[in-house]
Image (cartoon, rainbow, N blue to C red; front, side, top):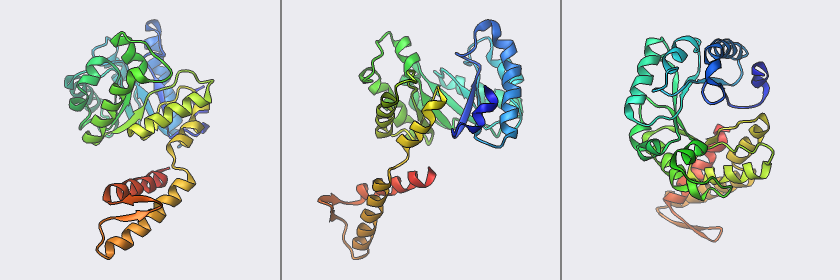
Length: 264
């Protein structure tokens, strides 16, 4: 399965040593992940990341020492709950000679969400919110409408923004329901996430659709900025555009839309 991922259209591929691998298979999985990651890197396709086991686990140190090839884009560290976890992970990567790797922190427990503002800062470069593990840890009930994770999901997005960390939205485990994925991704985009974790290749195109501004949205942003910039040059701080009062905050939103379109 691993070589096929280079052509799936994803921006990044994550090879998982944590939840996808039972305890008895952890040792064999390291060699497979290392070889698979190297193969993907040589294919010169998407970014390649490896998700290791959590820092406090018995497998973390060996995962870093044995499963991560040179040139890896980054390492995903799940269930980050305290600053010490970040420090230990960064030190382990440095010892392994992987100082150029990105560090993606999984915020997916009650403690991690509560301390997100202390966790999502340098040297962490990326983060994801894990709704399923969070609800399991909290003892709540998972639903399709996401009300039970709204606070935590928002808190992680906010902490990531303040810390200058790229935030990735939660997975949708039902990979057979495209509309549910699109609705869930739309919620994530509204909360400030810039991308989404996918657990099936069929979700990749949906994620691109959800997080890429539509052509009409881009054209409106361009027209709004043209009118606003012209007015600003004439000394006006606010204008009426398309029945809406537009000042700097709305102009900033329009610039963000164009930036997201350019990134896509």
